Image (tube, rainbow, N blue to C red; front, side):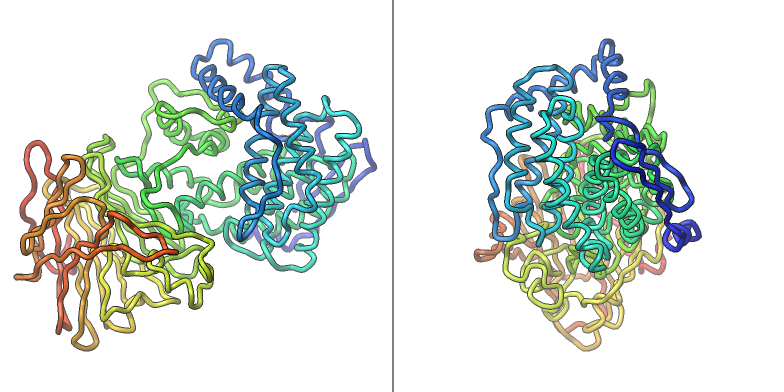
Length: 614
C-alpha cells in the first residue's frame, strides 16, 4: 500500500487535454481515463436512473424510499431562494441547505418531470450564484457550494437555457475552482490537512471540475492531480481498521464526501484512480458505525459530537456496500431505515436487500487507528448491555482530553454518557494550545474518568489498549493511561470487563500518584440518582441500574452537579457520580455497574489486580 501511495505522490503526472467539446483524457499515476460525453455525468447518470426506474417497478422498498424523498422535496418547493446569511463564523449552513435543496429538487424533476421542482432548483441556483462569494475564508463553505451548484448544472443541464448554464458555469469556476487553486498554489490550508477538511474540500473541487470539464478542461487538469495527491494525507487516518479519529459525527461527514468524490470520478471518468481501493481502513470503515452503536441507538461518543449522538441515516453505507461488495453495510442501513425516512442519497446509491443475509459483526470489537476504540455487548437487541471505551492520542482534530472515557447502555437507555461538544462559536474554542481547555465539555473532569489533584489530562499524550480479550464469557480491555496523567501519577491503568454472564460491567482503575493528593473519580449521567454510602441507584423512566463500590473499602459516592454558567452549555439535568479520595498515593478503585434486569441484578464481582485479568 505504501509503495502505491508513493508512486501516486512521486509519479509523473501527465494529462493530455483537448479543446472544448472534445474528449478529455487524463493519465494520473499511470492510469488513463476519458471523460464521459454529455450530461449528466456525476453519480446519477441517465443509465443509473434507468436502472433505478426498472427496479422501481417491482421493488416495494425502493418505491417507499422514492416516496420518502418526494414528500421531503415537496416541502422545499415553496421555500424562498437561499440568501447569503453569515453566522459568527461562516455561511456553511447556507451551503449545506443549497446542497440538500439541489440534490432533492433536481432528482425529483428528473424522476417525475414536474416543472415545479426544476423551477425551484433554478431559483436557488441563480440566487447562490449571484452571491458576492462563497466565503473563501472558511473553505468548507466554498467546497459544499461548489458541489451543490455542480450537481445542479450537471443534472439539470438539458433543461437550462444558455444564460443559466453560463451563470452556473462561471460561478463554479470563479467562486469555487479559482478559489481552490489559490489554496493549492499556497500549499497550505485544507490541502495540507489530515482531517475532514481535506476530504470535503478536495472532493467538492473534484466534483466542480468534472462538471465543467468539457467546456473548461484546464481546471480538471490542474485540480484532479493536486487533489488526489492531497487526499491520502487524510485517507490514511482510517487505517488499519476504519476508525474516524475525529469521532462519530465527523465519520459521517468525511465518508459522505469521499463517496461523493469517488463516485463522481467513477461515473465521469470510469475510475477514481485507485483512491477507493488503496486504503485498508477505508474499505473496512462501514463497520465503525455498526459496531460503535449501542443498543440504545447512540454511538460511542468522543471528540466534538453531540451528547447521545444517535446513529443517523448514513447513505454512504449503500455506496460502501456496493463498492466493496459487503452487504453488512447496506443491510445495517436498511435496518435503520425501518424507523426513519430515506434521503435522496439512499435512492442515488440504492442497494437492494439481500434475502437471508445475517451480518457477520461479532458482539465485541476492537478497532485501531491513531484513536483506538473497543466495545463489548451482551447482544444486538435493544435491551442488551453495551460498554464502549476509547484510547488514542491528543494529536488529532476536534480532540477532547478524554482518553480512557467510556459509555454504557442497558435496558434501552444510555446510563453513563459523554457530554459531547460545546458551541463552536465560543471564543477560542479551537485554540488547542490554551483557551479550548477552559471549557468544561472539552476537559477530563466532564468525562467518565478520574481527575488527580484537579488537573486535566496532559496535552501531547497517548493512551493505548495494552491487553484486549474479546469474544469470551467475560471479555475485557485494559488501557495504559500513564501518559495522559503523567504530571501527577507514575502509573494509571484502566480495565473494563463484562461480568456475571455479560449482565454487568466492572470498571477498575489502578494508579500510583507521585505524591499524596486528591482523587475525584466520576461518571456522568442524566439519570436520577439516590446514594447510600458505597451504593448508588440510578433511574431513567422506571428502568434501574445500581453502581456499587467494590474497592476501596469504605468509600462512598457523592453527587456533583455538572451545571455550567452561560455562554457554555448549561448541562441541565446532568450530574457526576463521584468518589472522592484524599491523601492517597497507590490505590485501586473498582465499581460494578449492574442493570436491574427482570431476573434481578449482579451484586458482586471478584476484584483481582488488573495484571491478573485473564
